[in-house]
Every structure is written in structure tokens, then in C-alpha cells.
Image 1 (spheres, rainbow, N blue to C red):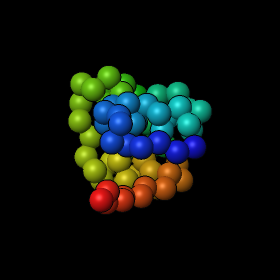
Image 2: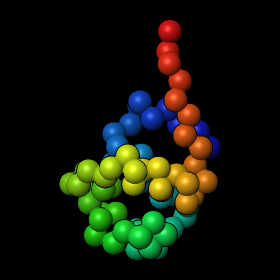
Image 3: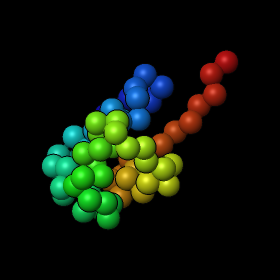
Image 4: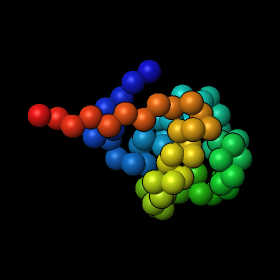
Length: 71
């Protein structure tokens, strides 16, 4: 699956990745050493996550991150 991150808010991207993993919020949180509450707040946009957390999510769940400069 592929998405253009620029078209989404950060909280939407976290939810999409979690849905790709087919894990609930509790188990997704465990997979990256975060609480259920943290994942819930990330997905609802109530709490921001760091770039480090985002990269951990991607590494743990085999999500390839590609940056491309548009012309």
C-alpha cells in the first residue's frame, strides 16, 4: 500500500499505519513501547508525536519512508 503523506494530517497517518498492521490501539502501542492512551491521543490529534516516534513506528512495522522533492 502507498499513500502521499502530504495529503494527510499526522494523526491520520498514525491511524492508517496502525490499520495496516491490523492491530488494535493497545497492541499497536505495546509494539512501540507506548501506552494505549498515547496511541488513542495520537490518532485523535490530541497529542503530537515526535519524528523519532514516527520513525520507530515505521521501523517496527516495516513501513518504508521516502522523501521526494517536487519540481
